[in-house]
Image (cartoon, rainbow, N blue to C red; front, side):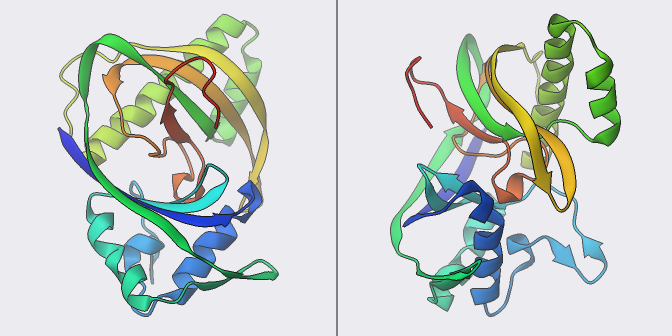
Length: 226
């Protein structure tokens, strides 16, 4: 399956804590406010895989658009207003690049290696379950199951049918810490894993991917940095 992706990269640096503020500034600048930018209706939150995701790529603000989000991002360009208020600072945002590509999502014989940053795989209930597991091996197996579930959910939303078994193994947990989102404490992980799949750069997996959590990148070599 070929998945169309568009990445708007800004020249302006933001901190990880400013991603949510960046999202709010983008939405505030729009005239029509297409639902794909914010995933809200009068009835509340629309629970689906976000087609427009706000990121920090190479320390700079970025927007990743998937499928229908590519058409909707035209509203950002039509608005033409990139004077954003991010927290307490006024920022003249400059678009550095706009890149589109088609990613092949498919199974592969040789496993591919990936890194996922600020991944939120657990809710309050299964966090307690995770904490109760004493064996590190069993904890990793528990997280592998969650990541496979994230991939299957993503595939369902994108219309990709997994006709083979997903063979996924976490090779390293480089960091784990508590993260705060909407007043809730969640455990965030930075991990490296290998899987028998080709996956798109910079998509999000897990919870809160619309604001930069769970961003996926391919590992080219062992010295690759964020």
